[in-house]
Figure 1 (cartoon, rainbow, N blue to C red):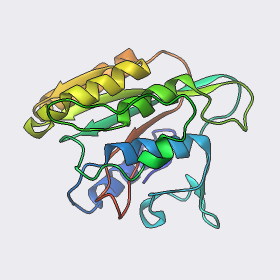
Figure 2 (cartoon, rainbow, N blue to C red; figure 1 turned 90 degrees about the vertical axis):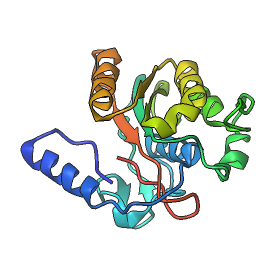
Figure 3 (spheres, rainbow, N blue to C red; figure 1 turned 120 degrees about the horizontal axis):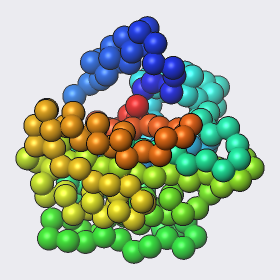
Figure 4 (cartoon, one colour; figure 1 turned 45 degrees about the horizontal axis):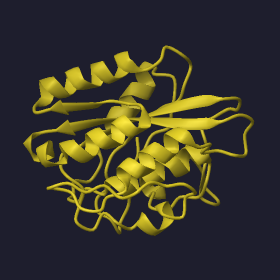
Length: 212
């Protein structure tokens, strides 16, 4: 919904306004959200993104194709994914695309989550060049935050996804702990000039994925 910009007062105000204007809805398509974020960094066409809710600085309006924030050479980007629950039962729209990725791992399963590919995708994005149009190797590291009591059942899959990508998982049961988790994430990022984005889940699987 908002491009990666210098955080001036105007940019901060615009970001807050855009977030406050987001429509509320159900569904937790974690795989689709992470896959869409990967498309953004790859500079590829939108899949589940919504041009009505995405900053035009992020994509080519006539296509629409994302404008990758990667500038070349070897770079590592960071994604912060905040979820208030376990993946939706129909969080599988990206599965056929994910399974075509060379060397992709197996689906994740535990007592609460069945056959979900977000850990395998997070691992793949951290190990492989996500933007082959640029010189060097561009990779992505994932940090996950489980927010609220509803995310307790998602702790396993969120932690596995973060661990496999080289990131970390942080639980946050209330607003204060969410603030603390975000501060911890930022503190864990390498102090270099890298790209940072957050992937928030969309209204539902078949409507749109909204990414900050």
